[in-house]
Length: 170
Image (cartoon, rainbow, N blue to C red; front, side):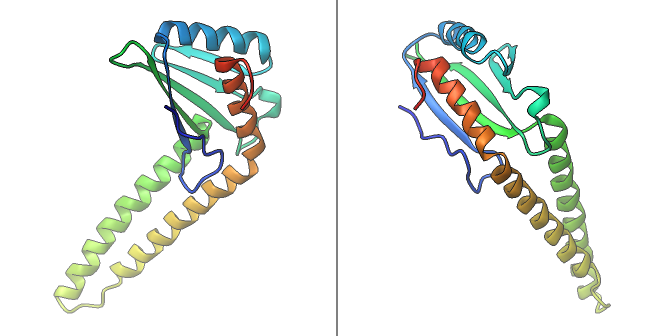
């Protein structure tokens, strides 16, 4: 069972899932070995439970993706592979804190606007709430722009993964 990899989607972090009938240790060894031989220019980071595949430093841009593969055992002895595409951690943290900041300020401003409305004062808090919603929308649009700019790099990472797992690109 597998879900087709959305190399470009409306999600902030496109993802896919695939189940293979081999143990997580075997899948890990195959992916790491194949990537080392077939794609030596990619930067592969091996962590317990997942593998990170990054583009070489010379090719990285602000919008460049990386692929994290989570390898989890299934009850029947197979492996569930979940791949998540996203920007590098430095860029992802800008979006994460941006969403947290706009969400918190927008929520508090909405509460303030509601309180101002309740006491029959001018509800300027709603203007701040609307501004935070607009900034959150801009963050989302920038994330989509980054996905579109990095689509070929995302395809390259996915092709390297498919080749490492199956021996041929799909």
